[in-house]
Length: 413
Image (cartoon, rainbow, N blue to C red; front, side, top):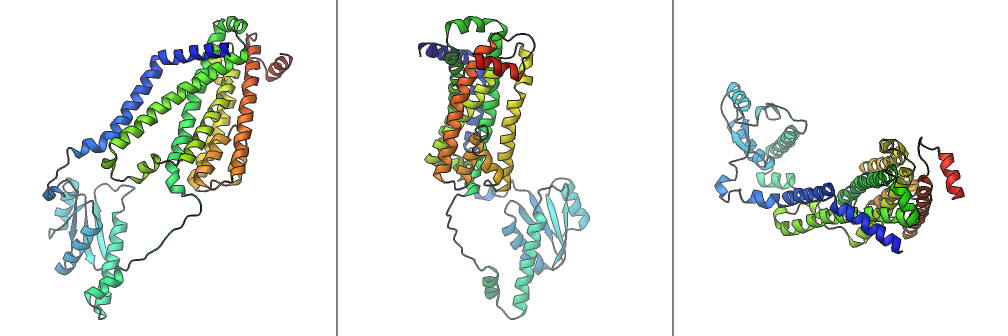
């Protein structure tokens, strides 16, 4: 235990003294601070004068030959296109085109009849929904006029057209849309941390071996203490970095909460249920540890630093497979498909698969317990196996050893 503490302390000091590690952490915290304070900063430059409310809005021109239609269209379009300054014009088409190409107007609707028009726009964006909105507005105008012509008063026609449908939604399970954002963030954070810190563990082990320092260390400390000390140090360093990043984000968000205007996506991320947050920590830590042990064990069998990327490719591909399965299942909206259920009990994919199912679906408690139990047991087992491989790898120099040779050497150890 004393050896383990010394190794853990030594590895943690290396992370703290690492300028790149500290610099990246500070840089990310600064970036998050800028993002979280952005609404507060922009509010300082916004005008409080109501007369300037449409000053910065892009102009949307409307033209109709019939003055009555022009007035009605302008009123309805102004209500529908709230992000535009809707203006009626009597100018000809050439003038309207000139206003658009010069940038004085964003677009224009020239009515050619009660239910037909020409939409003029300079550069048509793939996300331009103005035509769809105009179609809906003109359809409502035509329906209202038809009802008025049949004898209804404008008030009666308005009541028919503006009838409100009331509904209630009673959820018996999880709201996938509400949980999607922070589930995605957790999966992506796990992806980045495993790839980053797993590679760092591998690099540290391979560096020690190439410098022959491992041979000295292995004679003065137990392989188990060395492997667990290195991996847990990287885990603590990674967790501390994430706490600094996400903790600062939570702090800055609470300071500027009123300036975010009730943004549902941001609110959902910072209002993770405590139970789900607990599951996130469990799966995050166990998922990180199991891959860190694998990276460390494989790196101990490598003689040259340049061989690390090739050696750890199978583990990286295994992790990427689980990541892609989870992402595709999340985007499809079906997180309880057969492949996800299978991945929920495979230790190398369960940290992502089971957590996603817990966050976005209803999973019985015994399935969660079984998944965590299998993952925890496998993590401990791989930890001790990695320590044996680490001890054996000290003597493996030259060409990369085959899997059979490693298994035979570990079995005899």
